[in-house]
Image 1: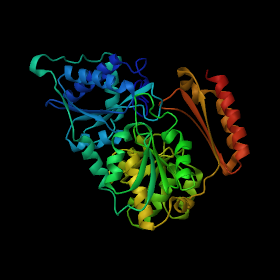
Image 2: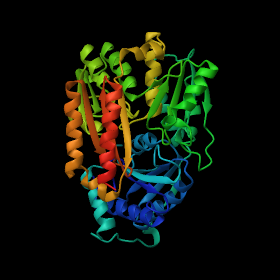
Image 3: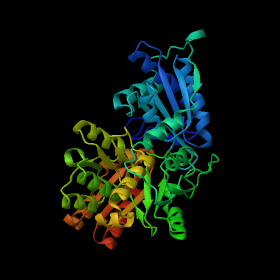
Image 4: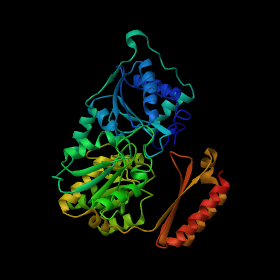
Length: 449
């Protein structure tokens, strides 16, 4: 993991960690790197979510880019996967998304995509970090006509929506859907998309004001959409996160259907339609044991990666797979996208419901969920670095693994985006895994303050 860019870009409190000064430096460094790669004038596309700080940071990054001779196209409020799609569709050299995804409004972040719509490889991120943090090379500031130009696109949202809508394989009318936009990026696209598909749908938390993104709504607060679906007799509920790159659902009874269950439902259907390349799903070590059991039962191969959709995608690209994702709801359909896309996932799930004639409740029975406990322990920045080498923590983890044996598992890892250590235990005995999880968490609190 880099010093500035974690597993999912740079992220922190806006105006404290992610500042205008940093934005200017990022813009200049990106323009410098692009100029080194090609002799032509770089062109960079920028989008963002609905946070109050987003426009401030877009202005600073665009200024940095222009000062080193890059032209900039602003595409407005869009989902993160829209930037990944548009940068390739429009033939731009790089795309930048300003968002902190599922985090509260005071956070913000910077994600950078290559011209092909994929996230920057580690070596390019490291080069940008060296320019910003180590003063390795001085960005060549331009004057006069060599300064970059800024333009605004009025077609970007429609182009992205048309692309996602084109993935629908059948008429989706007749399904009653509640859609929670988390007062985030989906607020700018979901109405156009789902109305275009002729769905009977209603939209909630679709009025962003700069500070209400992810606030008691969206995929991080599923109680809201669960109640809406139960109280109003919807067939299914969709909940996006702040930048709409992930999706979680609820069935007609308000039961949560997470990323693992969504992958199980869709993978089985893709296999039956001979659309699952190499008969394989790529997921992370965080996926539930029940997911792997379901795949074994239905003859589907699985590959596990480190946590982070970038690692899932890397494996998919290396091995020629077309489907993968995370329990959190980042799901990648490589036939249509170069990153996780919540709205694309929603359309693909609707395809399955339409083609099978089954409700989400019926489809979700394909997978038994093993009891799982996830404890987030707040630690210091130095504490995160000591996690893997601390003897007492390692002893606590090994003890829990010995107690669970083959009937469960333990995973302890540092968050790539927040000052947290995540403790995950899984097994059939819910009381036991809760007890062991709390014991590990207490040791971490004592050792990594």
